[in-house]
Image 1 (spheres, rainbow, N blue to C red):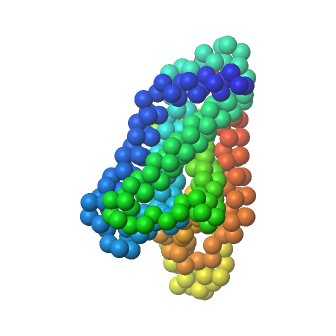
Image 2: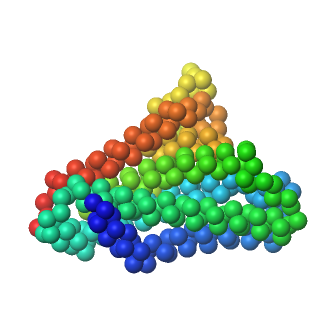
Image 3: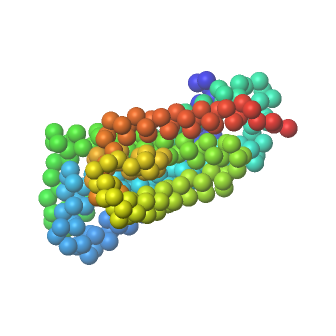
Length: 278
């Protein structure tokens, strides 16, 4: 198992997509901070972006918001490439167990994503501090008791959400044997669930008006539950159900998110076990 994980890590390191996706995330984040540094962004905006621990919320938007979409695309491309390049056939011909290989690949991709989160978060903190210095703003204390608690919560919850969403892209790409299918399904779910939850919440509010006091079923969908977990550290998201409805309790959100992650990995492993490989 360790050997398989190491081989997948080396494979990921040699893929240009690995570095391009990370560079895209860091570039977008740096561009926003550069614009704020050049324009000032207004007192409230600059304080939110550059002053810790509030700045962690902005970094979360990049690392776990945009980062989730990029993570889905990258993970799906890595899983789907094994079919298009014939890697699965070679691996199975060597006598490797199918479930073992699927879990080893998922573990290696997860390790890469965790490393990317740490790098992106460190760069985000550095950019926030540098932007604050450029604007003459006090950056606060990022590692104070409150700041350290926010940092650890953000990294813990956010990384779990990122891994859960990436696992869905991984599972779809494995089941359908297609890079594109994993990318489209993952990003489509992300956008579609946001629209669905907003529409259903608006309908519920115009009907019996209980949406404010009850947790709605659509808040437990794979991507919406991630938003509920992230809201515990970055504040509510932009859709109506998250802003005005009753949020899912963090404990339940954590449990459901972990459940989706486990189910996605099980589906991918089972799909590879049952696949017919010519």
